[in-house]
Image (cartoon, rainbow, N blue to C red; front, side, top):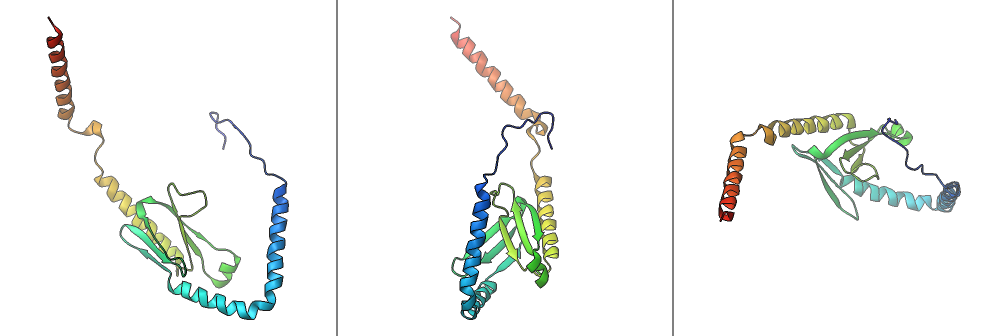
Length: 181
């Protein structure tokens, strides 16, 4: 997507040690899995219990002006995302999500960090319909705000600018009259 006005300043290169990092990360995951497999009968019921509590505490609500998200077991998170700040609502679905027929709804906003979505919720029933409702309400809000937005200054009453000009001319005359001997 180079244009004629665009020139490359620097190309970032990826260090070969990145391969070693990913291999070490995979080895750590495999080691953790091998060590924890005998403990699965103890770990899985605990994980299920914590996830059940987390599931009971998740809510995502569309209001006339915002999307409100509440979640968390140990760390409670309440987030309100103004609709006029939402740039996109993305749906994603990995292979395990496809198997369980669920999807992740991600809310992206202008000025968000490079880490990805501002908020994401996994498992909203009929995520596509919810996404469409959020985007429709966002469009409704932005249309209303642009319709009621004040007109640009150039289109306002010209008499205000004329009054300012006349006042400046009077001040200038007064200054030159006071300076005259």
